[in-house]
Image (cartoon, rainbow, N blue to C red; front, side, top):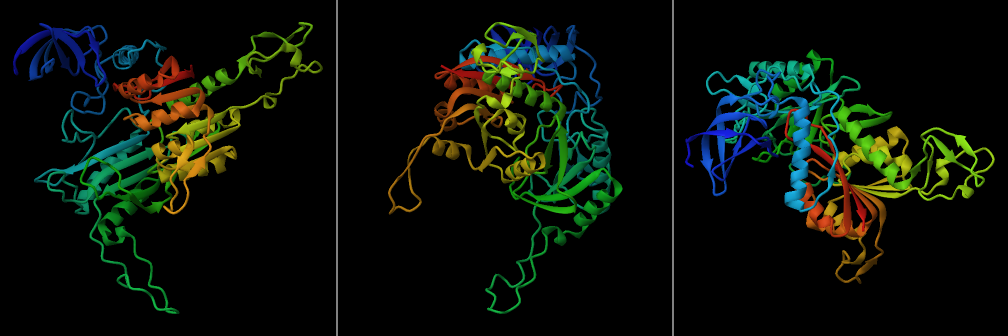
Length: 539
């Protein structure tokens, strides 16, 4: 097989990454924009030792699962990989991908349930990050998703998977930025100002935050030149905001806020790194307020521009409730429609929400009014790792005796503390810090003192009935895995957005825990991405 060779290929299945997979002469070939059942002609674009990559040139016979994409830019834009596939087949493929990752990477068989659907498959994405570029000659601003496998921007005027108000604001920003003679950041020469437009939309209140990410301006030093102020002398005035040195950018912020009442706040984020990292460490509020709110199942979530929150809030609610259901199932036994409440085996009717601990002796139950008080039962302790602003913790707070939430992001922790205040929750404690370091301390043992002259500190190990893990796409470090093995007394509930790293981590966890099942959740419709909830029980 050689580069540029034309082959005919039957696509067998979809893979994590979005490509279809076919085989010819013992060689595996990956082809994007295909679906299981397609019979195609394809051009080889690269050849490796054990596989090749190709691009489709002709569909000889389309799969029964192939449909017409509902977005006219689907074939160019890299935002969605699977719009050409009917939704039921997308769900089936995601389940199959998880099963294969478990078999091939983890080397274990674990039951994978059918994928929980997203109720909305259009306008579901409530966080949008548009990179910004300019054309060379006309200096026209472009903002949108990258073209597939490139860093060239598809200038998106309409995206059907996000709220239409975002399209309107993005178009206004493109035109207004050019009118004000602002510049876009150039990845090659590292020059230019505007790097990204970031939108966060509230499904509840229909308002949004706009963050304009820029390369920092050359600010003069603070007044006073850093010199010490003589005792009794008036302190120098506070340093101005960085945006004050960018009057045209400040005009852009004011203009867009005035044009769109749905914008609750406009912020500017300063990114000093010449990399693919979108947000820098410093953000200034320029107009309005610096947060939006989302209400899920009666719980209010305070969401700042820099904090993590799921991009699909309605499906996130399904996921939170699924995890809550798992915890309820693990700590309690449910009655059937008719239950025995007395030692004399007298049957009485009750609601399905009544709960008793597993193995409870009927003679120990109340004999007079036949009522069951949930609060009388022992509640589990929970450790929530990579907790973000405490979404899972908030959905579990009434089921737990106490919850410890570990999160590294200062912005997310601050949002979490505000969430506790808004929802009047008192049994959640946030610990801000790196998960590796925080969990290692929790496992106890000898800890080095801050002062070398002091004796080592002996810390008692901690244990939690249930550990919730929701790491970033890269998964958990080996250090975190080893700490979790010691800290989780009974159960682990691992939430993952990457089945490959989930399988890698499960292989290590399965030394001490039994994987029960995986419940996939379709958080990212029309893409190959999938969320997974894995339940593990201590051996």
